[in-house]
Each structure stands twice: as structure tokens, then as C-alpha cells.
Amino acid sequence: MPIISSNCTGSRSGGGVNMTGSPFYFSSRRNTFISVGCDNMAIMTGIDPMVVTGCKSDCNNESMTDQKCSGFKCCQTAVPDGIQVLNVDFKSIKGDKASGECKHAWIAESNWLDSNKTDPSDYVQYLEYVPVVLEWTATNEARGSEFRLVWTSYGEDYYYCKRGLPRKSLSSHGM
Image (cartoon, rainbow, N blue to C red; front, side, top):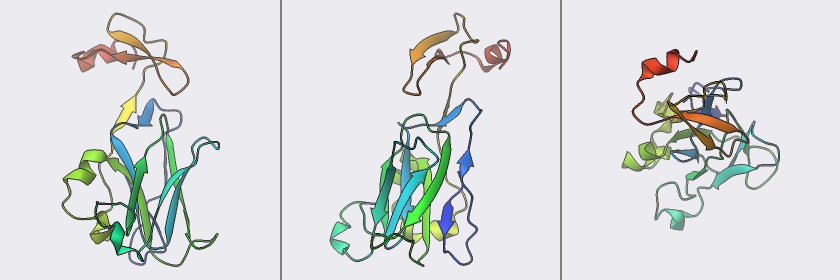
């Protein structure tokens, strides 16, 4: 997963991610949206316009440092169900426009954040990519004993592979 940046000199800014038309979605259970920067409000865009998801971080209140990414230089929040598009709109906490300070945001596997000993704001400028978990769905055409019908929050019924299904069985269903 690329890291999306704003106002960062010497840092390559990865663009957003668009998986529309594919069977892939960002896992809402196994990923976290993370953003680092001062005077920072990072809002996920490209999702349902009725859903506003994001977080804010600041560098003025060191009392928030009791947890990793708790709002001091770094923030995190849950990833909404069923999103295939990620873009980020950076805003200033103090106003409507983004401040001129460097800001970063990305979706990453939750275990990746938990496994790092330090706050991501200390090393994000050295990263280009982070691990992310994708879920996939097989459409209604993939019916059969190898699949199990599950209602999803993505708005439709989908068929998921049962555990232990060999990968070669998927290709025999035209996937």
C-alpha cells in the first residue's frame, strides 16, 4: 500500500488507490487508517459520500503520548466496510485549508502498527509502502459446493471460499 503525502519535500507521494471493478476490498477487520503530522486532519475520501472517516493529530499536547498513534503526531481509526477506493484529503485542525507542514496517511495491516516499537511519525518519511490486507469476493456466478453464501455489509450476497479450498479449484470456476 503506498503512503499518501502532502507538502513533504524529498518524499515521493504515492497517489490514492482505486480497486473499483475488481473483487478486492480493504479489510475493515484487519486494517487501520493511520495518519501522521502536526495540525493534521486526514479524511478518507473516495468512499460513500454519506460516510466521513478520518482522524486528527497535533504536536502541541504531549499528554496524549500514553498510547501509540493516540493523537500526538499520529492518529488512527477504523477502516469502513467494503471500501475499494482510498484518497486522502488533508486539512488543518485550526482552519479549512491544509497547513504547509508535511503530512502522511495510509491504510496498513493492524498487526504492522502493533508490531512496531516506535511511533510511525518517527520513521514514515523513510517508507514507500506498508503491508495491507485485502479481502476478495466471488460473485453470484461462483456457486457450488466449494463456496459458502455470506451476506456482507458491501450491500450484496457474495460467495466466499470455504476454508481449505485449494487455489486450483477457483480457476475451474472461471476466476
